[in-house]
Amino acid sequence: MSLPEVCVCYLIRSGADGDEVLLGRKKFGLGEGNLVGPGGKIEAGETPVQAIVREVAEETGVSVAADSLQLVGELTYPFPHKPAWSQKSWVFLCREWEGEPTESDELVPTWFPISEIPFHRMWDDARYWLEDALGARFVTATFEFGRDLRTVEASDHPRFGVAHSR
Image (cartoon, rainbow, N blue to C red; front, top):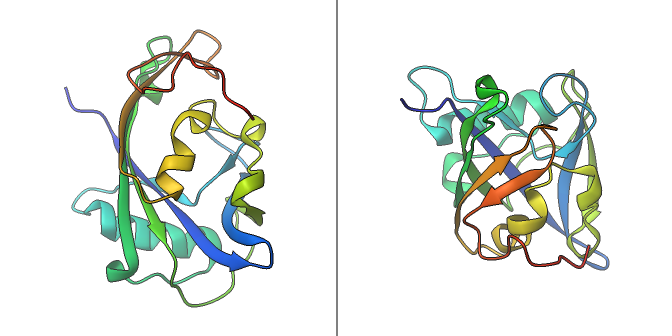
């Protein structure tokens, strides 16, 4: 059985102290309260690229062109204790877009220096792979969430089980 597919995009800009990434506080639904990249479900008939172009516009008001997107990840998320949450995610980076990010019904966007990402406010898996993806290093991994539906209990990612500095 194939998993539902979702997509996420990390917008990156040059800031005064280095690169910054756009994260948004999720207002409701799966992951409510977490900081996430703009994204969402891939609808029937859409490619991951078409879906992320639509999702970024809906959630931030920003227009990204398909040819400005870089695919940097393919992640699988089994939730054995809540199978309806299990999904496959396509991860994109984008450094060129039109417009300024604005709050939507879904997200409250904020820029963060990449060197100061608040991993403790994100889904638990981000601490293992996000830095690689933001550095344009392709990531393929599976992150299995535990009974609390918040903590990664198993993963094939090389950093899983290794203490993380943040």
